Length: 298
Image (cartoon, rainbow, N blue to C red; front, side, top):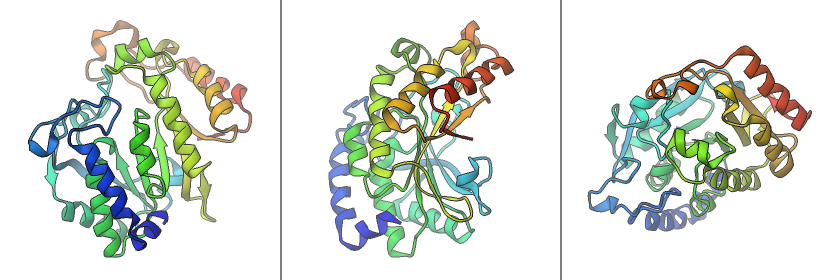
């Protein structure tokens, strides 16, 4: 794994030093809220000094290239920099389900997942804990960790943080949620999502390229993009697919997801207080194939 080279030559610790500078005052995500997290403050996302997780274990519901036979070794981190009104994991993203873990404990969780036979270490919503994760990764490397590292995120990522992850992350697994900034603000409570997520995905692809599989069909490295179809075409799937084909790669791997359902606060918004229809989903797939017939759609 690429992070092992950085660990052996000492550069992993150099990256960690820079990332810790972004932690206090906090500038890890595009919100750049400036919370003094090491002094006990919590950021706008809700995260404080210590890593807090809701759970971990082999996960067989991820994309097939991540699951293989042993499952994806997921670690679910509490809180999120987005405020999606339809969040399907709101108990986790809003911090209602969480337990604090030390650096040593987080490293041991990674090793436990490896021991269970997982195909990778899947960091779910990790953006606001990147320094702590890299610190735990260094500990785990010293104890024999050697699985691909998956960065499973919303796409709302700060470029400076991503630059420090080059050579550390093996597989980027971002969402691309919206093409319109006003829609993103209405439903996810953030500013300029397209203007932030698009450069972020381009940087991820620059670092790792298209998804690379081993002889078993299990992912070793690369970019795998997720896109959740929203009712009424609110995500503007067609525009996003053309962006991917034009500015990232016409052979990108993309999971166009149909599992939207109204949960959390979605009942307050009549236009999204329903499931996606079969026709809306088929139109999204058609839009992707029109943008690039070479897309690898999951």
